[in-house]
Amino acid sequence: MINKPNLLLDSRLAAAASLVRDGAVVADVGTDHGYLPIALLRERKISFAAASDLRRGPLRCAMTNAQKYGVQDSIRFYCTDGLEGIPLAALRVTDIVICGMGGQLISRILSECSYTQNGQIQLILQPMSAVEELRTYLAENGFAIREERIACSKNKLYQCIAARFDGASHFYTPAQLLLGKQILQRGAADPLFAPLLQKYIQKTQREFAGKSRGGDDTTKSQTLLTALIQIAKKEGIDYACTGIF
Ligand SMILES: C[S@@+](CC[C@H](N)C(=O)[O-])C[C@H]1O[C@@H](n2cnc3c(N)ncnc32)[C@H](O)[C@@H]1O
Image 1 (cartoon, rainbow, N blue to C red):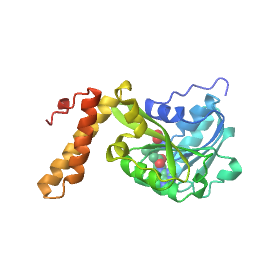
Image 2: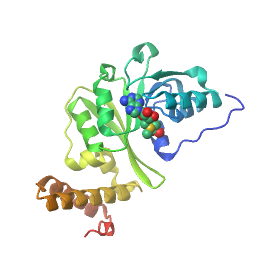
Image 3: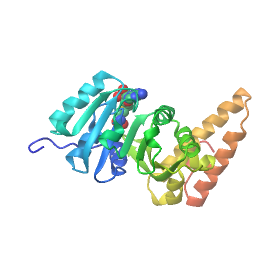
Image 4: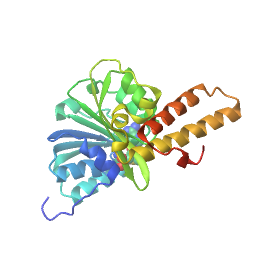
């Protein structure tokens, strides 16, 4: 590791990496370039990592990067779908990271791996889309959301979720499914909250308008929009600036 270049994660991956526990053994699913486990190993925050990808090209890139940053002896690579065939128990994996994929794909990968149904295992998830579907999957399948963070990278907003299995059913309102209970509790104290809320107000307004035009049922969109505007008012956030009111 000595005399190797440093690796700085962008804000999105840094937010996910900050949720990984000290001393963890990480499985990074869909690792692509491998930056997240490589940076955590370089910082000595984690001791060992398994990195998987469905495609050989990204995995080769991750292997090259692991060499470049001098951590190749602390990562094992798997060309596989999700967590399939990774010896999670033998490797004593404690934290499973899945970043940069759609919420539905993340849910599917989790549903195919019973190793995740253990309260000691932490999931760190960063969906690129369908964040409500992912929270619904977690709520309905016994996973408690323990921490949520907003990240902004290249002018795009992302949510990172840390969850663990507790076997209980969890209930979230439509606004909580979209924005996260913890993110909502912190509200405008987080400087990224206002832009995130404004983004979802705009998105919900577009959905509402699309459904209205198509003659579809608008009840769900309308209820969500009302809830989001109430939150904006409570937090003193300008929702008129979204340009749609
Ligand atoms: C957009 S990249 C995200 C890379 C990295 N995790 C990040 O957040 O920067 C998604 C990666 O997931 C991989 N991938 C897609 N579906 C997968 C699956 N079912 N199992 C494992 N990897 C998958 C893709 O090949 C790609 O390298």
